[in-house]
Length: 406
Image (cartoon, rainbow, N blue to C red; front, side, top):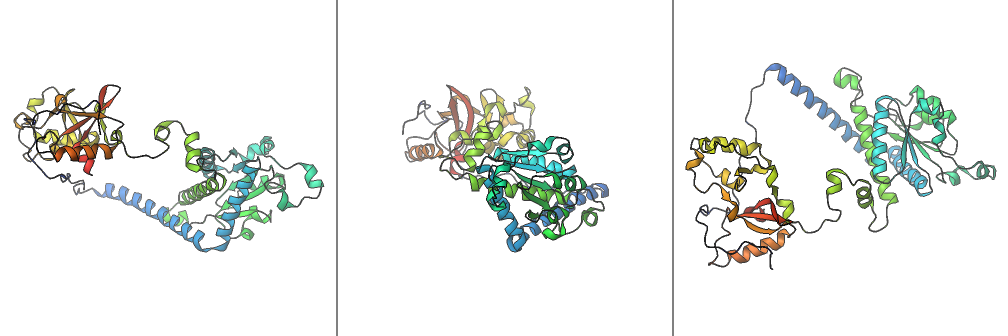
C-alpha cells in the first residue's frame, strides 16, 4: 500500500540500537514490599474488609436472582412493566429518601442516558403538589370497566420506591395517594411481598428483593448505609440495562447506539460509535503529554531518566521538542549510575521518525513493516524505530515499531 507522506527510504540510521528481540521484557510493576506501621495497617485492613464485605453481598444478590422464584419473577415483571410504560408514552418515576434517595437519583441519570424516560420524585414534595408529575390513565377508561391488567402501562407511569427497610414513613405515607392504575415496584431488603408494608398495601405491586448477607452493624459496627446501598445500586443498574435491551430492539438503534446519542460529552462522547479496525492513532502517545527533561540534561543519570519515565504517560520522555526517549530504549538501560550523556543511541531525533497518517490502520502499517523488513537492502525499520503519526500536516503522536507486534 502507499502511505503519504512517508519518510523517504534512507540509508541505515547510524544511531540505531543493536538488534534485540521483538518483545522486550517490561520493567517489573509489582510494588516493592513496604513495612507499614500499625496505624497504616489498620487503615488498609479496614479498606479491604469493607471491599470484601460488599463484594460478598453482591455475590449473594447474584445467587438470589439465579435461584429464587420471587426475585426472578419480580425482576422480569419489573422490566416488562417499565417497558410497557415507556412504549405507551409513560415514564418511570423513582422515589426514595436519605441514602436510598441518592441511589434513586443516580438510577434516574442512568435510565435517562439509556433512553428510558425517568424522573425523581421526593416523597415529601410529592405530598405538597409534586404528585401531579405522576401520569395515570384517564378516568373514562376506568369507568368503562377496563381491567387493571389492561390498564397497566397504558400511558401510565410506573413508580419505583427504593427503601432498604421497606417501611420508610415518608414512602408509606405516599402509597395511599398514588393512582391505583400506576404500577408500583418496591426495591427493598424483604424477600416476600407479605413482609413489607409497602407491598402489603398494594397486592398488585412488584417486589425487587435487595437483601444483604449480614447487617451493617455486624459488618462495620455501625448501621451507616454502605452494603445496603451498594446492592441497591447494583440491582438498579441491572434493571436499567435489562429495560434498555427490552425496548431498544431496532437494528442500528440498540442500547449502545441510544446511549451514545444521549452522551455526546466527555471521553465517552469522543469514542467512535462503530468499532472498526484499530487505528495507529489508538496506539499513539501524544507529544504534548511527554514530559520534557530539564535543561541540565547532561547532568542527569540513567536512574534519573528511569524514574522520570516511570511517572510519564506510557513511559515516553523528551530531551527537546525534536528528540524523544522511547520507552523500550529506556528499559534497556542497565547501569543506573551512568550519565545519560555517555549513553549512545538513547534519543530519537525528529529527522528519524517514520511518518504515516494517523488514521492508517494498524494492520496496514504492520503489513508494510513486514514487507520492508523482508528486503535486506532496507534497514530503517530495525527494532527501536519510531513512527510519527501525522494529522493536519503535523506529527502529533508517536508509536514504537514494536507496538505493532503486541
